[in-house]
Length: 239
Ligand code: URA
Image (tube, rainbow, N blue to C red):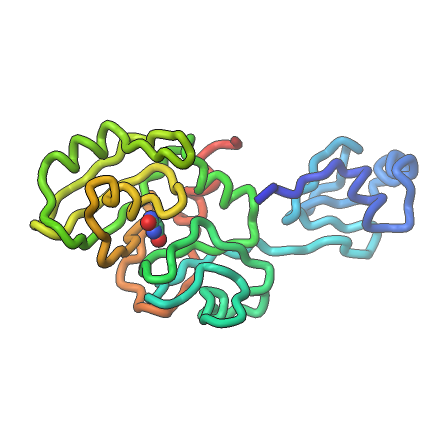
């Protein structure tokens, strides 16, 4: 998801009847206000969430939205689906049509799904370079032992993409249950990592994405992220 940033002169050209060359004059006359400050440069960056006012006309005033959902089993991580309930169907927000999913979960996986309309934020949360740990609770069909811990730490080879997974931490909780910490999100990654041992994943639940944790949020419910949770995505650095 690309972040939508443009130069002030291009933005004004696209959102008003003025040409790009008119913008210098508008600036000199102090007629453009960005986020409450009189604009100073035609090269000033305008993001998709900057509030831009020209004279007494507001050209853009969009609020970023950040939500978490406790996804139940049998719900599709998509915004539209002809057959099944989608994560968006479970969201009650007047601007939910603007949202996209930050890291999908499979149909039968439960747990934490983040949704936002801020592409830059979701990119920072998702990129493996940010090394944000996603924690999963896993139930498998065959007993676990320390060979899994070592193999996941080393990385598992996925022949289809010809890649080795990033080092992952596995905490074995019982013979059939474990907590797995991943810093990336390849297609069906958890199932394929256990599939390397021919061990079927029977239940999979995402508990947290970095410090953003599902906590006691009930299955099927959603809530807005707190300012501190949003800040986690802001402080991962501009990538
Ligand atoms: N890995 C999987 O295999 N499935 C998920 O839903 C998430 C991670």
